[in-house]
Length: 121
Image (tube, rainbow, N blue to C red; front, side, top):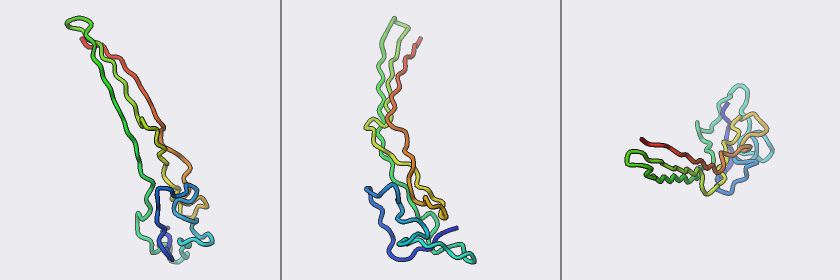
């Protein structure tokens, strides 16, 4: 099912509410997305018209090699994922007939740090 669109197209901003990312729910009062009729389930809204919030993530990897002997080395490695710990929201609910349409209920992975030690010979 693809919804109809009536009225002005909602302009999505970075500060869009995660409770109603696409605006009011389909079929709700004040919605610009009324429920299509049963005999014409494909509304006039284009395919893949909805977009999710963007992803902002900075990763960093640092490596240091230490010589133990002439033929043996130890490598210390640290990796930081999403080092700035920016909140990246998950995908909005895309079920057109759901009361939770357009709401975001998840986030992507927060900052992660991992260390590694490797023996090279």
